[in-house]
Amino acid sequence: MTKIIPDPHRRTRGRPSAESMALIEREILHVALDQFVEHGYGVSMAQIVKAAGISKTTLYSRFASKEELFRAIIRQQIERVAETMPLGSSKAYYDLEEGLENYANRTLEISLESSFIEVNRLIYSEARRFPELGVAAAERNQVGIEQLSEFIRYRAEADGVPCKDPTTVAEVLLFLMRGWYFNAMLTNSVIPTPDREDWVRRSIRTLIASRSEW
Image 1 (cartoon, helix red, strand yellow):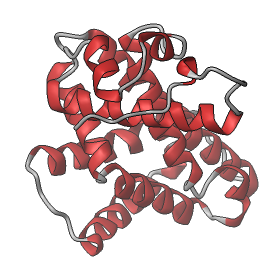
Image 2 (tube, rainbow, N blue to C red):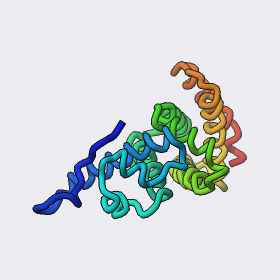
Image 3 (cartoon, one colour):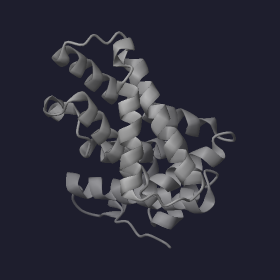
Image 4 (tube, rainbow, N blue to C red):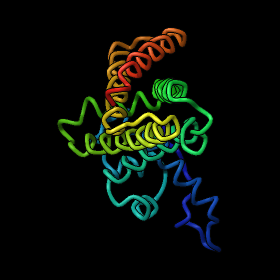
């Protein structure tokens, strides 16, 4: 479906507000995601321009290439997750087990939303043809590793329990989560929330059981 976005480059008077510009960018990303999902990563920028109902100038002034446009979609999803993550500034309010469980549950919950699944399926199916998709996914994964390792490092200091390599611990947890997620995604399984929470609880407790070796 064609999405008509107000085009600031077609305005005859005045300058668009920051709010208007932000809205235009959000709408471009929304249309672009729809086009990627419908046509695959092979969709052209010209097709996205047509679907969005904007000028080439409007699109290219914000996203110089299709790769940059897709990376912006990934960044938008990272920000969406970060806004609801129970770590960061609130980390002092969680013990290690509770913090890791909350992080894993919230991440998996959001990742099962349709827009996230669509992006991940696109990456999985086309990364071989378009290596830049794999690079974008790896960068997104690195953000998660950094968030988790910071929390693990903080809890180690707060609890007086040494942790030699919080980054590896974070990687182990994220790869566990990725395995669970891809199994659900590729089999089109609808996982009841209690089942997901039970898996997360058991996985975190198994990981924490080896804390003395961290």
